[in-house]
Image 1 (cartoon, rainbow, N blue to C red):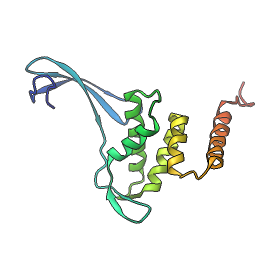
Image 2: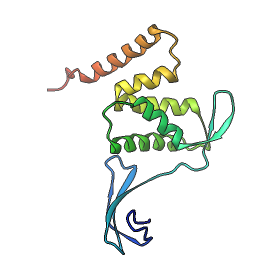
Image 3: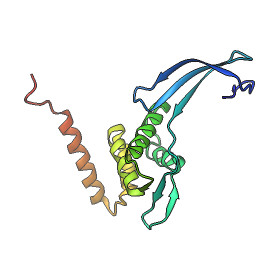
Image 4: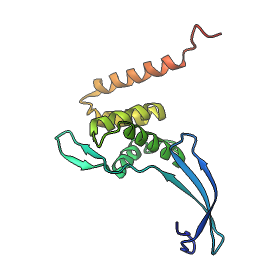
Amino acid sequence: MKCPVCSNEETKVIDSRVSSDGVSVRRRRECVRCDFRFSTVEGVELLELSVVKGDGRREPYMRGKLESGLRRALEKRACEADGFRSLLGLIERDIQRLRRSEVTSSEIGEIVMQHLRQFDSVAYIRFASVYRSFEDVENFREELDRLVRRSSLKEKPSKFRK
């Protein structure tokens, strides 16, 4: 790891902490030459994974495509960098859990929607409207009603709890 100030390649790790979601490690580093301290985040990288598109084409998994889709859905929403990294890590973890060398783009889309639904409901609706190709306002309303029903079920206190 190069120092961002002096480009020295010798740095030492001062502290390491696993993120709360368990999908990344944050390391505090110090340059051996100039003593500058900086942080790095280490995460899992999906290798040798092919995405099967709707038309049957296959292409290598590209994290950048997933990132850009999430960024579009979360545009102008309150989302901190750590939260975004965590969301991305959780999505990739679920893709890895499939334990296959090929995954369909629709499977990835469903995983993304599952996580976005919990992360940010507005971003979820934005993503779903593009992913599911809503044809009209009625499709949009139906998905919004499902989201509202699901969230109201979570908020109601159980009659079995005291």
